[in-house]
Length: 65
Image 1 (cartoon, rainbow, N blue to C red):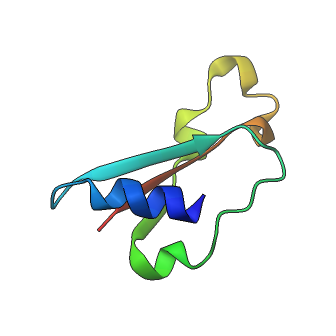
Image 2 (tube, rainbow, N blue to C red; image 1 turned 90 degrees about the vertical axis):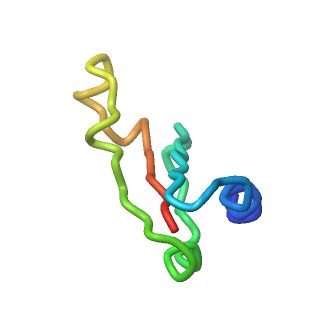
């Protein structure tokens, strides 16, 4: 996933933002990404009401330069 995020970030103009999400419960974001980008976990803000009782089903991050 880190290579995919790096490739997508290269396509963004300055000030651009990337939203990366997945539904794999055991997913762990590569810690190295935080050394290259500003990374914010926005999972709680993006969880659908249908899944509020089980929030571990969804993970979402915002990446910025």
